[in-house]
Length: 256
Image (cartoon, rainbow, N blue to C red; front, side, top):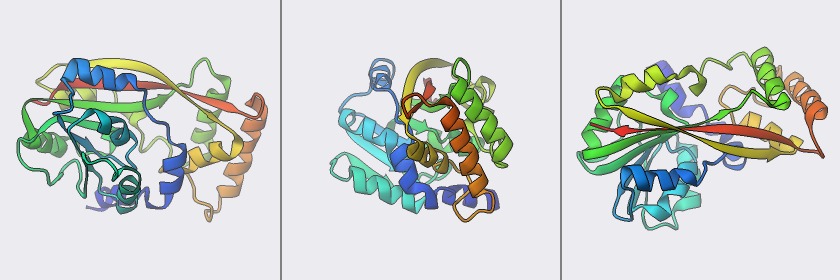
């Protein structure tokens, strides 16, 4: 049980930073879901591992019903605070492996920046259970670009050298083979989109703190980490700002 229970609590003390500093997703995703998955105002969508509702908020104006399925109480509450004004919003205390949703009710299952936390075998079984016939599953995550950007290359090196947990829990460990196994025997299509965020130093620090692997203020290495982040920022900022460029990965395939 240990690690799975822990993963549902990892972000509890990072919610404010997560809400403020995590990147959203390009609006093109909605156009893609309309075109490829038949997303309409009549669709029932499950956003699984919905966190603070970053993708949920994008989906809500374009769907009939969106179940935001999230096991972390603090993140789920943040989404409720932000999104309860939508009549189509339903907040669900559940996991990818146990969503609690009824059988055969969902047209589209989405998981944004969450797939690397799933027990993939059990999640697949659960997705098959809640999906209507012909339903789609869409996996989405933002990858920080580390090439052609000196600041981001330096930031990646900083994470590897100063953050012990970095590399253990990241979607960077998920390759197309793992995705292919998850969709099997169905095929899938992969789409890449560009996306960016700008940061001043304080917001860059907030972006780091929103990550599950980042040290907290009371951690013995926190001050060293902040100093090193400041050094990189000072070296690479332009007019007091640095840019995170992302490649948003979107995988689309039939659930079954």
